[in-house]
Length: 305
Image (cartoon, rainbow, N blue to C red):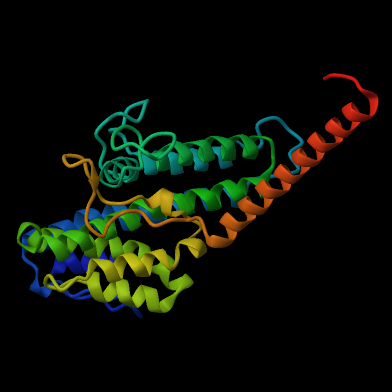
């Protein structure tokens, strides 16, 4: 992540094993976006995870004195601080520039705000869920439940990927469908979002990661194919442990509908629907048998019910 930012500062190229970026074709606008967004969404994102891991490494499950897990809790709190930034305020309603604010911005684009992830304003569903995990994880560390707290860390990491996926999809759409309006700025932003999330995608599906990279890499020049990017991401949701409902779809508030080709996918599978049908029929059969027994008893005894 630091190499990405330094290459953008220098106007040069990275030397990664995969997913390289060459900033020589960018002016100050594109390089500025790569630096700002790369710092926040790549470097700070990773440092949040680092602080959570630090807390778990130092957590003691066999505490014999009071407050022996204060240091791990402090590290956990640092993760919360890096996630939120100093501008969000005590209620998260401020106008920050880090990951908390990113989640709120993207939920407005994808209609995933609120408790049910169905609104286009307010706190993002991702932030609501992440802060629930932050709180539960801290309490577990205080109780010395170190192994259990790892589950909170893992879920936080999964949820933190959601705004990165949403950002990648948003700028894939802009650079595909709104090329004149996007320009170098939109291309650079899409490249940052993709670079931030591609290692996770690559661990799930190398082909999907390559497709996303090809469409959103630095210098793609308006050649992005939104449909390809969307399909590639959706093929990895199960592995990434996120749902279609978490990601949502690009929503046009003015028209009150999803943008063409950008509606949410559907997590429910045919097998899940069949299970529901089987359960429903089984319950219905049990109820019917019960009714027949009551009718038979009434006819046998002559009693009215």
